[in-house]
Length: 143
Image (tube, rainbow, N blue to C red; front, side):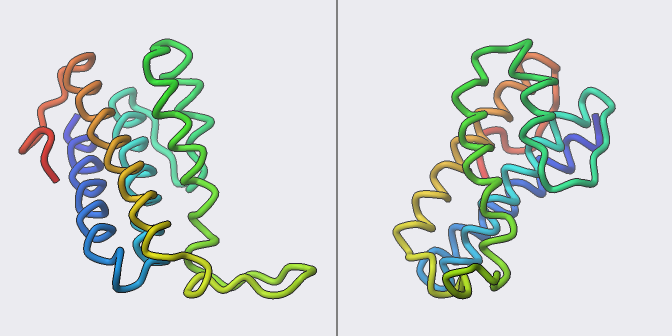
């Protein structure tokens, strides 16, 4: 459970970073929002003794949690959406119609939206882990 607690604290640290960067560097804010969700999922997986080094973890979250706890279906959609941006928010990518430039692709409005999604995900999952698995957290509900 200690590792799960640390993962959750790291998720909240990423939320703080995402919030600070919304207006400054929206692409980096999006990245930290995605990271917050990924790390919250890794906290949940850790509660079950599952360790993952991958970035794409929404499928495993679905299999290990959503199937058993259907109330998590709503936040699962957030994980799927944000997972699409873990690479796109950081690196230029060649496409047939040009180069994806994350610094120009994301607006502060985009970053704000992704931040709010990530915040909902992390805080909802934290509440779930406390309730269902007895996870002890510092500053529950805060980040």
